[in-house]
Length: 319
Image (cartoon, rainbow, N blue to C red):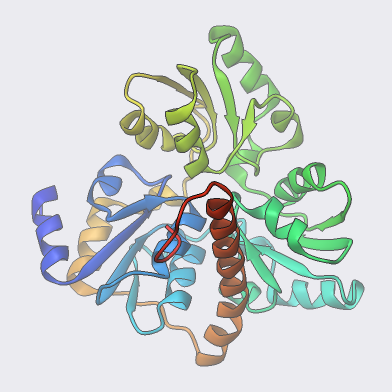
């Protein structure tokens, strides 16, 4: 397979679905059935009709998809794409936290390993992290593994004490306030859309703090015509397609080298061989599915309630 058309025909004929994260290269986004942020892809993965799934994203996303589809073959596009943030907290670390803070619920950000996910109480994404933490009855909450995400949640939920872990996303950590200020001088009318994994000084400068899918939604609906995008630079490909009349400015050093390990050749190989497949033991699947399902159930309830409040009807699964 050499052309986009051949790839599309092959996966259609073999009942294979391709999921791709927003940080994937444009040519991979072009062949994906669904492109989105981690939470969006978790929802899609929970409601896919196919025989096999090839996931173009880091290890924790692929394994998340396998947890939600135990009856399907789930394949790594490239198993070497391993997220450094997810590796910053281990299952043993979570056990230590439980001993140190007995009875305090642990929220696991989606960027965690499957072993960690099996130990937490509920998962969250960058889009719903604030709502998930607010939903818990405890006045203390542990949020792992990203300390910058925890700091953002803390400012949004001041009534609770957020206990964080010393992990970080290298892509967002390297973006500094001066990077934003420099772009603002060049584009004074631009809105600044920042990801909640950014450091506090960047959050302070943001017009809005949003997940990557929310950035796309916001750019499409906002009356503004210019946006400074403070996350991994590949998101601009989606933004330009979604809002072609608007201008988007990126931070050149905001590149996720983990996501870029996945190439179009990797995807073709994964489609043709359906290898390497995610292999998880039965107990891990049971334990790690539970916090994911709790998150998805809470999200579905929030979605239904918001639709009802708008006087609309809802049917089918959460989209």
